[in-house]
Amino acid sequence: MFDRYEAGETAVLVHIDFSDEDRREDLTELQLLVESAGARSVGVITGSRRSPDRKFFIGTGKAEELAAMVAATEANVVIFNHALSPAQERNLEVICQCRVLDRTTLILDIFAQRARTHEGKLQVELAQLRHMSTRLIRGWTHLERQKGGIGMRGPGETQLETDRRLLRGRIKNINRRLDKVDKQREQSRRARKRSDLSTVSLVGYTNAGKSTLFNSLTSSDVYAADQLFATLDPTLRKLSLPDGAIILADTVGFIRHLPHDLVAAFKATLQETRQAEILLHVVDCADENMTENFDQVQLVLKEIDADEIPQLVVCNKIDLLEDFAPRIDYGEDGKPERVWVSAQKRIGFDLLLNAITELIGEVIRELTLKIPASAGHYLGQFYRLDAIQQKEYDDLGNCILSVRLSDANWRRLAKQSQGELEAFIFEPSEVDVTC
Image 1: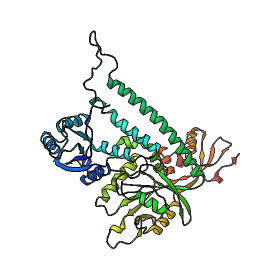
Image 2: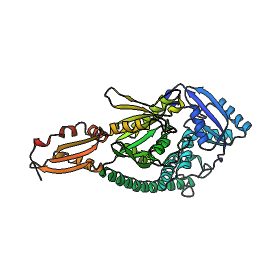
Image 3: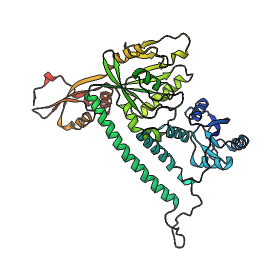
Image 4: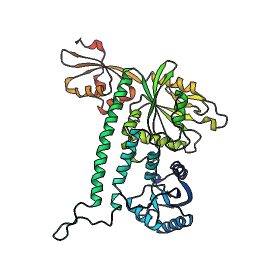
């Protein structure tokens, strides 16, 4: 669809420090992303600005410096550690005479390489098409447009309009197929709930060691590597605990400024995180950016409405710290908050399993509600969560509902109802129930 320069394997990187905290990125992370994408860095352009330049993002002088470095190193792609507008990309390509990628396009490219399952490929394609739809106007600038007025009419539908129509059609088709996948996942989640197995989901910054921890705990062979976004497709395994068993889910890693198109496309995958009873937030405790990465994961969890779910922080890679032994840190309420382990060396696993066991027993709620007929819409929400254990009606038409659900789901429903659901809680002896 594009009349574009071909991207290659040798790249010049561009990193700008902004005074605005929201625009700041990490140069080391960009280098890891480029390495994960299979490219080789042959030069780095750095600088600082208060705000991006409208034409070149980096200013005219830096753009000329960039073009000179591209010519000197014979690089065939320029990669920015920032999000560029379509016009900025095109202007930079003209002056550099090579392909220019921004951070979002680079991450999408890595996701496209990593996708293994049919669902994962569909999700990545959807994200790429949504991103591409804002950039179609750069292609086909040589073609005639339709115009109004006598003697000014074009030859019919232009190539640009055709591409837009085909793009919209493909996006609708992928969304329909992903909706089917979402329904299949929902059926699987309901089956797990009926078996009384709680779901614990691994979340964390990319390359924090989630898949390595997952493999070590469940004796699985999920692909794990020291690279960003090694895991895309969610994997679920049964994990035995001292007092029972759970379902452990390995999910895609997060990153700062995760493209919104990716978050939207991976809705079905991220649903495993939203429906979990506990989140194991894996952090790389040997990373100097541990605090910043932790905060970025919290932002993404908030964006996908998973910030209300109880978390157990798993501080991984203690084998890279000097004289550090595994331990559990408890909060003021006496509950486990942090567990220090090494997934690679299998250190501290007994402490981790004990902490999960202790938390699992406190995140399931069993409640009896008296719901009046005027509030019957709440029944559908409990049905969707497969939380209803028993349903009866009293003489006044009130529904006496026994439910069993995770504390996170209850708090989410109570919050959405603005406290109305909490007013329906009652003791069974308070009413006379008839079948």
